[in-house]
Length: 624
Image (cartoon, rainbow, N blue to C red; front, side):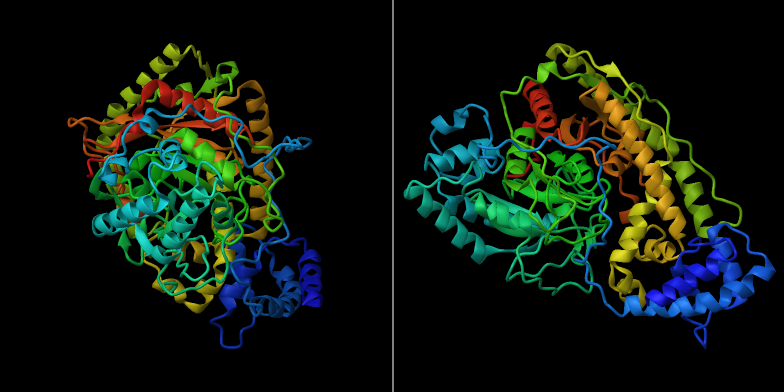
């Protein structure tokens, strides 16, 4: 195989095209040929895709080497690499010359420095109907369990009953881990009786996105064809939450292979408006947390999969800095973009869950030894706060680019339908703008004078192809075997179509996109040397795509509730999940806080202060 590679590079290099064409292009073109050989016509087709020109006299020099190298592609695919095998290239979001602050020695790094004072609920009589506690926070329920005013078993039984009650409406459960949960809850109560208290999470029921492996239970990744998949290990995050005393009660739904909110069992719904999807791909964690069916959940984000459900379902989500939480035992979509993080009822809840799951595990090589410790008493008033002024004042939509010449009739129809939907979109955006303006008034009352800032301008949409290419590699065997047909989505923006497209993506362009990403990281490093926090409307400036590329953390918080007079949000034709964009009367809106790399604790502290000033996180859907 190495000889084949050398021949390939030699053949290409001899005519000045070393590594220019993605081998997958020519491989794809040859798999249907009778003799499986690369021809001059195929080189022309591949060159057109790569955007280069190859002269006729250069083709003969290429053919021998390329046909020899093609055998190596078969040998690589014959390895049948499992999803858990990572490439040797490790993404690091830190700008050149900078390193994260290492943890200090001599302290218990799994305990927060300070948490908020004991809540008033701890001094009240526990209601006979524990459903009245369903929307309580980790801090509240943790204190009740610690004081033995409510047992872990009782909470676990109550939340499992709620999962069973609301799942027919919301479709957020893939597997209820009832036996495991009750055994854990009984052990948690026994430990408390014996004087052993593990953490603020001790005895509290939680749910995990079904990309987290759990021994003895199926791990379906939400995808058709994976319904019975068993992975005989506990993900690192599951192990750490077990060690903290938390009780896993369910493996929650996710969009098929982390796309959207549709999975093999249907579409996960928004508890505020069950006619809507809950957004994706951490669809089940967002919906179940919002509906008061778990105390907290663990989701994942590659590009918006915590942000979307947190916004749609009116909960608080933390997308940690890339490399803060080990992903061992979880499904890989993109090695350089995937992140695991909590979805909860408050920013302090997020901070306390992160306290239990952060830090290297020795297996996920992208996970850094950076310091994290939650401190509710952190002086957030000393933080320098920036805001994306243009997004807070926006009154227009991003320009809609017409399809290129030669576009398919379907692409043209989608464009025309999107153009027709723009007036409705604009009305919806203008209505939501008043919540952004109100947030600026809250900052004034908090004594914060935000500084206007702009995000560095780079071709982030082009960089987004990094995700598609890495995902296509992670699931190449589905494309090659045709098993991608079992997935629930097959439209123009679906995984099957995107992965087939990525097979034609030039390797050089993948490297160039990552080089552009390096420039963006450097520019963001400069920006976060000038401010500590950036506030933005969640939908603003394409910031979700941008900051996922740079690895920066984000906290998404509820920012109010639309009134009965809110316009119904229009569908976006051609978008995943049928284009359902949420919104409409009596649904939540959100605000996003961005922070510096590995500054997740101070980011949570600022979000916590905002929630103390507003109380929007206390709102919940009208479910009993």
